[in-house]
Length: 317
Ligand SMILES: Cc1cc2nc3c(=O)[nH]c(=O)nc-3n(C[C@H](O)[C@H](O)[C@H](O)COP(=O)(O)O)c2cc1C
Image 1 (cartoon, rainbow, N blue to C red):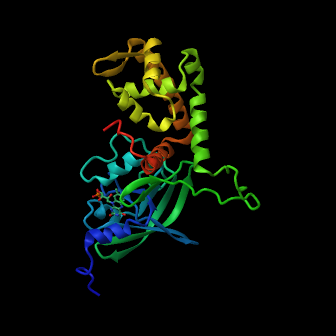
Image 2 (cartoon, rainbow, N blue to C red):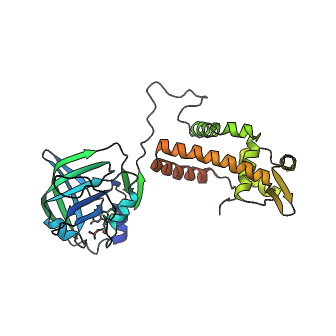
Image 3 (cartoon, rainbow, N blue to C red):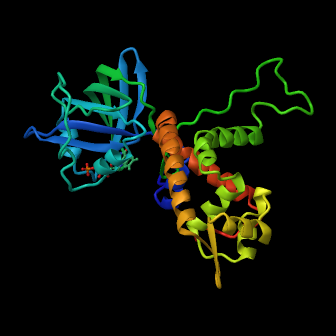
């Protein structure tokens, strides 16, 4: 059946990209012994007994002759922090292995460190697959780590986030009570736990929560007129009228100029200290949840911020 003109190629690719995959780098040695490798998400398991895997390579790929002739190749399932490595091996025409330390491998094929899993394969079969060649290999060795895998879906890298656990049997939330899966509860608790880490510094500097928000706002954008301050802080529930601003000036945190309110030198110094403490807390938490999860979380929170926005003026535009 000739389907070459039946599909819009871009749309077809888009449809295929809805299938989420991991990302691998497949490596081998050329006839001259040079290391060869390329990024592939067409990897899949085939058979458990005997253990076999497959992946497919574009006939236009520069590495095709090397893989066609190779007796052995290695498949590296990339970890979530290896997106830059994936990009490097997806670009033609650069020395992909420059500066990379390789692990020893009995088959002689290049073995990259720091992956979620690695499969050492003997090339078993090659099949015609349209504009690709399908390689099937017998797995002669493998190893794995606890590193979370890198994912690829709709043309973008992603990290795996497991769905929320279904509620435990018999743990149905009581009507009229907060449940542990309520978004509001989770956001509120995370917020307070985050703030608790640098609250001693706020106390030491005698900065109240409304003052903290006010100083943070002006550290991003100043000067701001009273109406602008009120608009930016509208959803905080804090009093931001002229008396509160005058009080902050009297405490030496702000200065009122003709064009609006600015941080005073002391206010600027105070918020810099607090910001440094908040950033240290953030770095610690990023380390605990893992940078890729942190990046996925930021993206989800931005979606939530956009979905819950009731028209705040944009701060960073
Ligand atoms: C996430 C991702 C997955 C890819 N998967 C494949 C694949 O399965 N097969 C393929 O031929 N090319 C795939 N590519 C493109 C190749 O990595 C790219 O064309 C590379 O330059 C080929 O290297 P070479 O020309 O040196 O052989 C993929 C690229 C990316 C970014």
